[in-house]
Image (cartoon, rainbow, N blue to C red; front, side, top):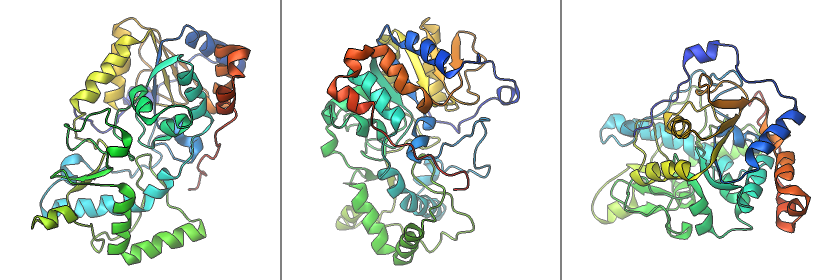
Length: 371
């Protein structure tokens, strides 16, 4: 399955929301009752990471926050011609400037509330469309990295390991053995090392990035770790070549992070595991997602076909709004999810030391409206 440019049908965007109106108290009770039986699969989207300072693609009306948003397609990124090199210049410059903000982001209260539900086995499997690694960070103090990988599926790849160019890299390979950037011949490098290579090759852009950081004038960062740049000429940006290819007497600038780009297929292992997670659960909870990307929407459709209860917590339209068997509540997750966890777990479990710490952790640092 190839990942296409996310869309929400115009009829849904133009229609009045069909979601029932809930007060926060009523929403807490309803979602608590939904989650209480356990064996829940959870799908999360960009809305979950907004309180960590990572802006979502879409606003409350379901439309792109940046109307000029133009994604780079997989075939453009790996094109061996001069045109492809120009696309790589554009991608890697924007990613270079945005990577640090995503890398250094901290889990918010929603991440930690979901982590508490995972730790206590209410949520058995979590499938995220996000590439920021914040779900992993929220469990880092209580689970080994291999267990986190087993319980969390990153549907669209990640900024903190690399497996997409070469499917022989097993999906459950320990995090410590994986690289974050690969060339198209399989050579890998840690992303921070690659970031340093970009700095060395582009001292003017390194100075620009440092000036932005010092002044606090950070450009708008997208959920996939790149930034919005206006009026920039990319042709002076140098994409570092793969040093391992140079040792083999090849010049190669075709390097790619472990993200699923538009027009690229999901790996078979990821697709099959996502379906298996839906089949194994008794109910599906979706949070902070418009489901505009079909790779996530198809999982909801599969749950509906299997007659599993489905509940969405999201502000604004979603691609599933026209489906009769899908329940939806429109409230920000950060305002209610901690209390939902306390309701579901009960006082004794919620006061267990590790769970209590989770329910007291998390930043609330949403991007400013004028970022």
